[in-house]
Image 1 (cartoon, rainbow, N blue to C red):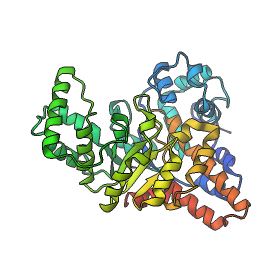
Image 2 (image 1 turned 120 degrees about the horizontal axis):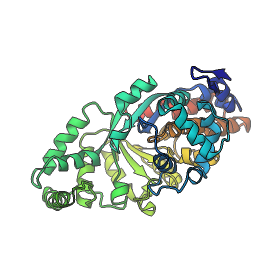
Image 3 (image 1 turned 135 degrees about the horizontal axis):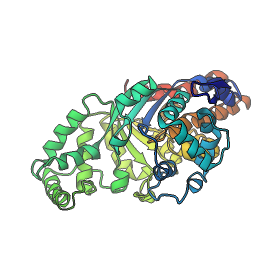
Image 4 (image 1 turned 90 degrees about the horizontal axis):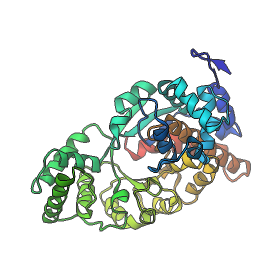
Length: 397
């Protein structure tokens, strides 16, 4: 233990690394600087109890207490692994953890946990409640890491609607706005799974269909003051306008907030769209995928352009995250699996995404070596690919 400037006894990075040391692959991953290909910024200010509870549970239904909010795998993992890094005892009670977090301050928590995450390159998507979190520049400043940007197409469309577009002009306005937004971006993202599910018509809509749908939607925006694009025709238009850019294309798959219908978020439902994108040589990145990680692995094996991760599910499954990681290695080619935390808001989630990924993948690959299924050389090669190299290749960096 070492004493920091606040006078709090802290776990050092070397003591944390010791928890990976079950074999040579675990040791290697414990030191590897990761590429997080799908992540969001962290909050700027101390969160309220309600805000913390919402962010730590991935739900917009606020738990009645911090005790309830942390009564889950992610809650136990936070109190075991994040608590010592911010100067609190491991396994501290939920209320004590939150009070300690507030007392040391959000800036300190972000600094300690993001440092411990050891992520060298963040691919940041800022399209969701971006005014509450650090963006590209902010994350670059507080981490000292490389930060690249991913653009959410639905957010661009909703900004176009708010800026007074017309039915006749919406298509061209969106294309122009997307071109500006993606000028320095390395990829784009769609949350079509949230809006209409993945069982949608994968064909490009006609110009007349888009104008008619835009007219309906813009009238709704004007009357309600809420810009939320959920018209199937418009969502299809956004996807194909994004495809015209040729950038790597992220799709939210599976587990997420309560405003989606999970049974419509199986990536097998978008197989026809994947086939079309394969012909156009557009990389398709299937994000987090739980509980459909095996289906995503199948698609990654079948199609040249499909990649996957199990981000978000790793953070929230805590002590069981290793089982989910193992399932991604069943069918998917090893150059098609990427690391992501998909953390939003709380640096605890960014840290846990990295920590649990390293531990789960390291233990799995070490077991392959110990059972003489794999060589140590190959196991370390795969670990480096999943944790670092595959993202750079998939995004053509």
